[in-house]
Length: 84
Image 1 (cartoon, rainbow, N blue to C red):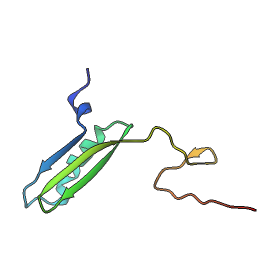
Image 2 (image 1 turned 90 degrees about the vertical axis):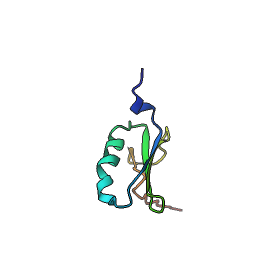
Image 3 (image 1 turned 90 degrees about the horizontal axis):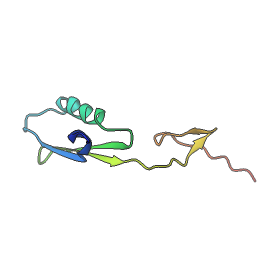
């Protein structure tokens, strides 16, 4: 049976108005640490309502971009050479 941490898809935390953003680092890192490799963590802070929103988004199953047989991460750019 799965742990409850594995079943949580997202969480919203209401904060005090005096909470600083650097105080949220430990909470966000714990949520990312408990997330498996099949998911990405999307974090947003609603300053007007003083809430922290974190949710797990499923990663795609396939990766299309490769350079020299190595998978390219999505934060890197790929140079394309066109010859005629």
